[in-house]
Image: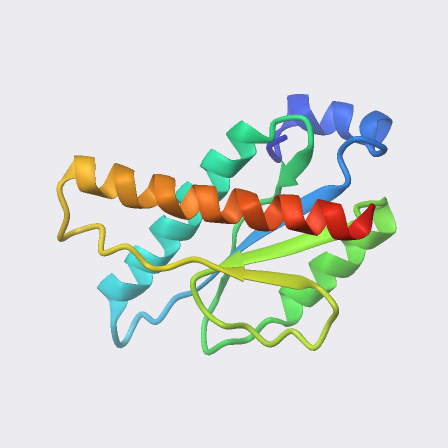
Length: 145
């Protein structure tokens, strides 16, 4: 499920089936390594969206969170509101190691240099990352059942 009007109308009635939230998080550095930040963000976005398509009806892909200077308080607050709503399995999807000081699972994707590769190679690398992320999600579900 996506964070849109149509899908969210169905969410509350189907929490027994949709128990997982994926939170994409990217740290953006406007002063240094802007293009690297862009590659990281784009990789995270694509992996999240393609995984959601595969697991449609089983998980919620939330809006992306952007940080600067590795400030994650707003992400932690959002995680708490997701738990209160009834989503118990929460995975933060990022291209960086993030320390949230919570029991939330973190999945770190490999950054793909989007500006340097042709479209076929990008697609292949993204598909590989999505497969690995999907395996991580399935392991997460198996642990909690």
